[in-house]
Image 1 (spheres, rainbow, N blue to C red):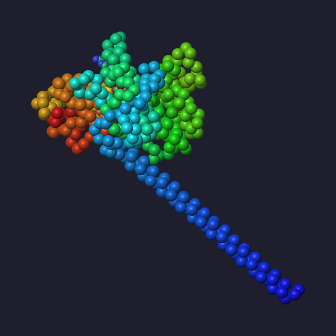
Image 2: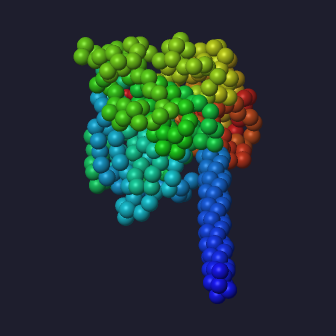
Image 3: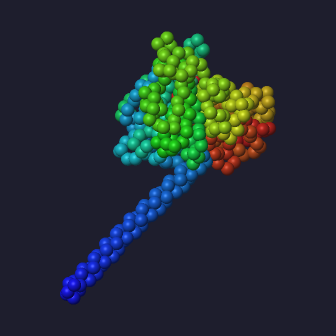
Length: 422
Ligand SMILES: Cc1cc2nc3c(=O)[nH]c(=O)nc-3n(C[C@H](O)[C@H](O)[C@H](O)COP(=O)(O)OP(=O)(O)OC[C@H]3O[C@@H](n4cnc5c(N)ncnc54)[C@H](O)[C@@H]3O)c2cc1C
Ligand code: FES
């Protein structure tokens, strides 16, 4: 071979080597950059997840303490839509008047409405669970019209009649911020059983919708109880949820199916939600339970679950509605409640505690001592007054954390003689 040719070949080989090294270098640089971008994205995702968990932990803790509310006092929210859901059940969609975003709530919490039922008189205060998943556009409340029942000498419900009969789209309702300690623990990932009956399904529906969106890998058993199809709210929306959420299983019980109601089309089980039925459908009872329903269901189901071996701290419940307000827990009989006197210092009025009343609030009302009230169930804090002397005893677990020396009069009874600032 001619020396010129050899030289050229050598130069070509050198150039080829340089090109290989160059392209290899470029490719290495590219994959190094890609890996760096992937690592950065992974770190950002982890940081976001961690921030979300910290935020969720913070929200849960403050929901349980009831100390950090979306706003203080009341603010007007506009009724943007009213939707009939089932017999006597109507949803009210509330937005801010200027369309600004609403603060987040925790699924299971409720809104407190201050309703101007009678002009010139103090507003009627009632609590209503938020029935949709948290979102910043609207709050949804689903409210049962408590109708009169002459047979039982029952008058129509004051607040629910006002809401169903007088409130219209475009009206403004004065609301306290969402609150309540009955919230789904989203920091846990274990299976959860959500049990609701009647209008008591509202907080559980919010929990189920939220879990399906925010914890799609969490196993959720949603067990609902209604009288029949006519009393079955959110039917289509819940069926759609059950068919799209991979880990959610829904069971519906009708206590009195109507003639046109079909098993396995409208409902699964004819009868009430009982511990026995739960044992048939659940893989085990070693699960977390969230319950809300009529007093009769709560009074039987909670003890039955405890007797069946469910741990006390695995059962979370909320009782609402007048029956649960008026009825005592089975374990607390009037005769076992402590005796004593209650002195209402501001009014200078004293009342004998003789076991006829469920709470200091009821005694105050009978004696004409004004104490504000809302939920009458230890959840809203409306009825708290300071204890100046003596001791009180709670008749149920409070959802609201009373300040310092204050007591929640709706769930407190005197333990001996007690002086309160009211
Ligand atoms: C945390 C919480 C969340 C709640 N969430 C919801 C919810 O999502 N949806 C919902 O619909 N409700 C909910 N409630 C219940 C709600 O707050 C009200 O208690 C309910 O709407 C009834 O209020 P009312 O003013 O209409 O009835 P009230 O006027 O307070 O009367 C209550 C009941 O007593 C009867 N009554 C009235 N007067 C008499 C009388 N003289 N003698 C005998 N009986 C009488 C009425 O018929 C009625 O059934 C919730 C309650 C709480 C505590
Ligand atoms: S009235 Fe709501 S805590 Fe007593």
